[in-house]
Image 1 (cartoon, rainbow, N blue to C red):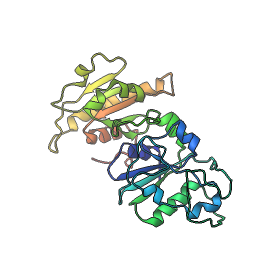
Image 2: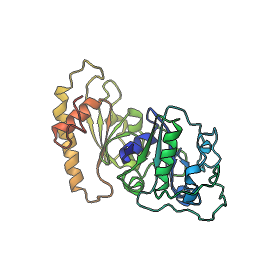
Image 3: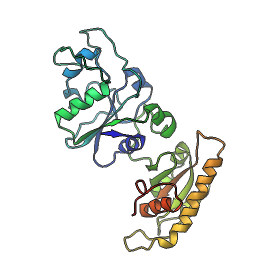
Image 4: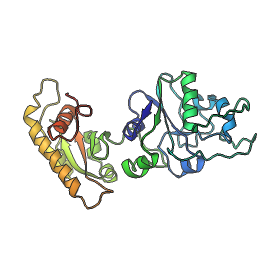
Length: 287
């Protein structure tokens, strides 16, 4: 299954069902910057050896070649996500028969498979049948993920999982919680310019973040339960989102566009997107 940057980002947060991230880039690129928690499985020294790649190093309790700040044990029945720099050839060492310490194989068997290493490895994982699914980043460049969409995720230091809000509309709208909205470093790293507080009965973000500058706030006093009538609040939230979109279009710095984090009440979030005609039913379904 092919996924985009949005799904890759949500898998970085440890979303339910995801069990492992595999970085298929070369070792040097991985050392420079990678997604925290991912393990590095670069292409073997020669395409001749790919089909005999030993998967045991991936499923070991402590993989010897992770080069990641933290090793972890893969859990059966979870989703594996692979990513690499799409469109770039695999940077491999063609010293036939010589291991560089980052791979090992059962035996050397020639193959004419011309596909990128990420696809070969994905097929091996599917055949192994230990994962519930194997997803590959495709259609969007990992460079875009790293430099444009989610630069705050890329680091060589281990970060706490689930630290950042979940992505709803890439580069614009996120669904977070009260604790995330209170963390100035997160708001600054993500370039958040607007916050919608839909957590009734919880301390107002406007009051709690009174010392922060450059962020516009909206408080929605709707209780978070299934019987709450959200209709009276739709227009207010839609107007707020529309104003944010207009500000984004007028933003003088396209590399740091306006972004919104909304706390709770995803039904209101999705419905508001439809009201301002920014998304179709396939992205913002009825809630």
